[in-house]
Length: 158
Image (tube, rainbow, N blue to C red; front, side, top):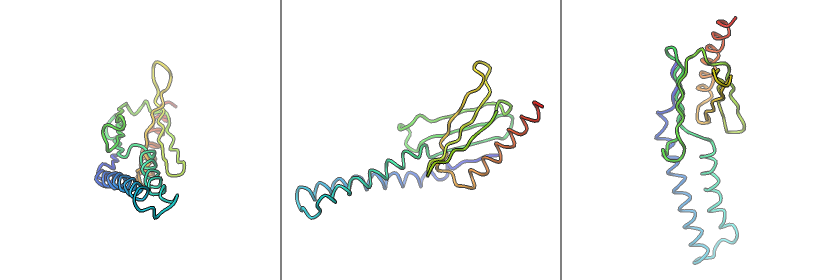
């Protein structure tokens, strides 16, 4: 099964650009109000704080683009940001038989995928992916595919 939200990258770029412009215009409006017009009192700080808070939430949600491929004998995971220099992109590929378990954690608007992979050296390794920008249907499809792999691995061991 293949799962990707790469086609939504232009939307995320637009949202990022829009938020950056709102922050710049908010700072400009704050400075113009503070040194020229004096119309707003302490509310003028909201012109900077609200856009900055929205931008911080956008980046705290994590990497926007997530790709998953379970076709063949290996699992492929890619997780990257729309701004290349912001975070290092994640790319992992391993055989299906090494998948031990997975967990999807949702806290408010942040979703994370934790994959436990068996390893020769230290028993198991946990891989972390940010899937906040996947829709509910995409997350359910991902869970279904990973469940099949985990179930097949348990049947082989028994």
